[in-house]
Length: 130
Image 1 (cartoon, rainbow, N blue to C red):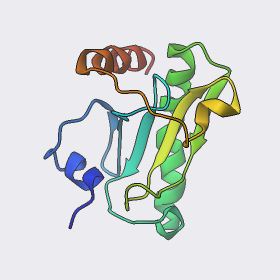
Image 2: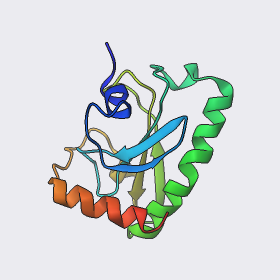
Image 3: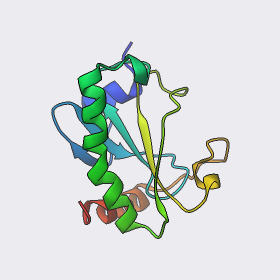
Image 4: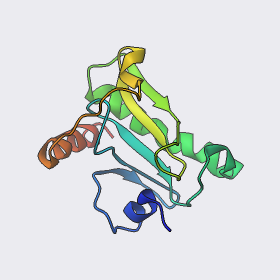
């Protein structure tokens, strides 16, 4: 069975797209830890990040870099944090989040439940800086 991320990549599930190329898709987390939380996934479904092909793994960070820079410009934060946990969805993915403290990237916290209009506003805020 395809992961939820593969279904998003295939267009079966709508998303708030931030960037895309032949190998990767970046989109907003619809249940973010903080406003501006972006997921970056390879289009190839691989469960664990360290099972991703070496060449693709290095391209992944290069793809994510301008998105991280846009997040830093779009939100009042000290930096864009990156996290790879991979327990909720069996499809390798990285989280990019605007952070000011380590608590901002604590995945045991309750997640936000933004409306579609709030997500569209966050999407536009990031896209304006890409």
